[in-house]
Image 1 (spheres, rainbow, N blue to C red):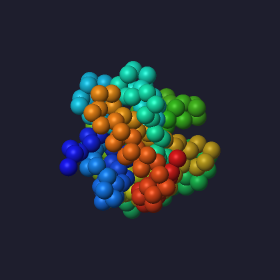
Image 2: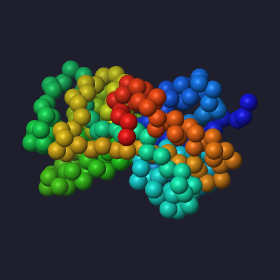
Image 3: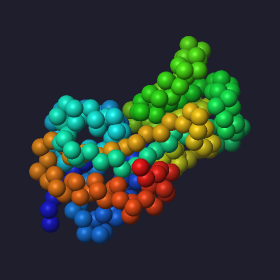
Image 4: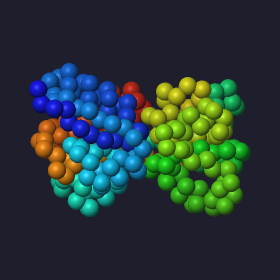
Amino acid sequence: MPPPLRGISSMATRQVLADLATAWQAAGGQPVAIESVGGVDAARRVQAGEALDMVLLASDAIDKLLADGHAVAGSKVDWVRSSTAVAVPEGAALPNIGSEAALQAAVLAAPRIGYSTGPSGTALLRLFEQWGMTAQLQPRLVQARPGVPVGQLVAQGEAALGFQQLSELLHVPGITVLGTLPPAVAIDTVFSGAVVTGSPAPGAVRDFLAFLASAQAAPAKQRQGMQPV
């Protein structure tokens, strides 16, 4: 039995990757061991030369690793799309977020707003800037700490309104997910995978990445609030 393929991913895809790795192995694929951490930390570990076979992060983060030579050119595979959603504490009033104007009103009414350190958080701050609200909202913004997801901030009452990938909010107790952002201001993230430079098993990694992007993987993605690319 060959050793497991070692991978690293961001937290947003943790559960869907666990489900798909199980399905892959059940079908006879080489064992896979994927550690999910904060996306920034994952990229740093790849850049530091940790012995890994694959990396699975937001598409732009993979592009940077490729450009810097930390991932193998030509090995990038886009495999899932994830939408940003909004949550409030369980039992709280449910604000309308069905339109851009309604979402603006909900944001302005929230005393504390939770957001992530990942791509959805970066895009959310850009949206607030586009709305001309950065200065007004700054004192109310609560960035998730390493190891503490936005949903937990909301559940604990540290944020009245929380923004994060739907997949990361779905299974958090103590919150109510209002839904994804309205189409006019949707924040979607494409996640990709690539072979880490120096992996002794690039062919096996490519096979696993192809499985992640295949039609067989679609039901698992949809169960976790994600979509095929």
